[in-house]
Length: 511
Image (cartoon, rainbow, N blue to C red; front, side, top):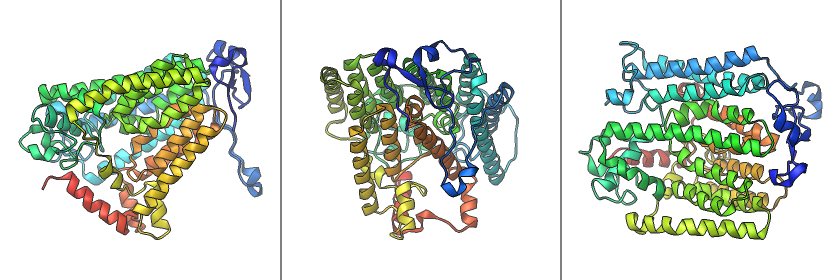
């Protein structure tokens, strides 16, 4: 696995060249988009078994025409999804068959006029659009050496603004964010000990998808949403959308900044992260709060690269207070600090930030903590522990399988922390291991890996991120359920899966 020293090593800093070999960072920093020596990662040939060595994949590099077609295709597909989802109630928007308000649909509401499209046709059409976006994404990656940065930036901003205009797509949690906020701020009920269904008269109840689940979200995020409870529901809804898209663009900007600090062309980082179809359709399209965690988490990496270690520790605690999974980055930041004085400063910054955050949590929520236990007991059909348990015949993601996955995660993290080399890549591999250990896996979890894959020097980490993207796209396609039914394959048929489905039904609807 190729390694790179960090940007603090002065003249010895290296960047990956087009062929995968290192080139001086000074050359990478001065390269122009048309320069053949631009330091961009590339899809190196896969190493296949010796018996098929002659079938090794060649490097793919496309011209600017293909790149522009790919960018236009991504924009058109996003626009098609938004226009269709705003014309009226569809399966694209959760609970739309029960309630579909014009303020939820957005300014393009009824632009297409009344349409009559069945659920099956909608599933297949949406699946086709996502697959086309996936293909265009790979074409854009193969052609980006020939594309100017401004064009790429314009495309990223344009597609996110288009998605901003539409309603949240499938698998969204926006109504739940607002439900927990109103539960605590308006009704005086602790969202960590009470559920949205206890206030059925609140208008947000009709939009919520987890009516009987205690909040799994971190105390900082929950506290940030409390002021929204005092606003009209439509206004609060759009504020969440504005914040989500703004943080998404900020995340891409931070990733590009880090890429420059590491002596690499930021275009690859921007496209790998910002035009990923899961990033667009599920993370942005669903307006998920992962960006509230990722911006401070990747910001902490930027601060370490700038030797602002105390600030890095403090900022990371903000990410942890949004989602606990961000704590996984801490040991790798300590490795990246390189020396004891810098590590001490990072710990001091983390402690100084953790104290007021803990006081805030105690004041608002007492000793109650986010409800991670119930969420960790739920299974998605294609989570890796459930698939493992299903194929070995123990009934899916049983308690024993999940414990084994947790132990394996701890072992992997310890080994990666102790290993020398690129700490950003190691943090990326640890995140891959985290996702692989989870019983409840959603498609947008891949965005936890993408920034680290874009900044790390490991070609295999980038491949793993892309393979994970393809896998999650395929298993979460709206039409994929029909395919699994045709081949009679249901990983939730086991005892663990059936128990999970029963629990999910209880948590989804208030009884």
